[in-house]
Length: 147
Image (cartoon, rainbow, N blue to C red):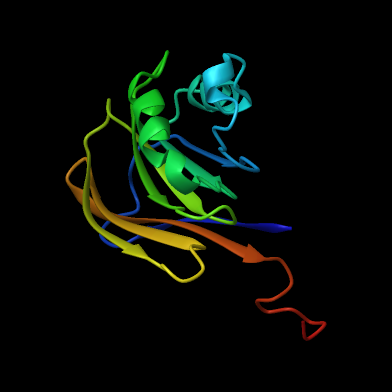
């Protein structure tokens, strides 16, 4: 299993922020034109929670990134900006940030080789924060089995 989501404080530990995390197991748009698209259904379910920040792993966006960004901008409950590190058909991570919140992304740091992490340096309500989405195989970091 692969998953890690984190939020790191760089200035203050006091912020009112709602977070969600989900392993989406692909945001492939292969059925988008057929009308019954599982990806759109997933995105509606994810965004209906109305979280300020949504961490997504195993995205596999490939060439569909622009369509996913447009769908998230048209959210039924909340509109989101999408930050992604997922251009291939494997792995990939994304962070969706509500447009209703005062969150400014100052810098994006990505692993372009494996596309398994995304670090966003942000100002949230005027305070500096780091939002991190990382997808790594469980048991490889700090494992007592030596894997």
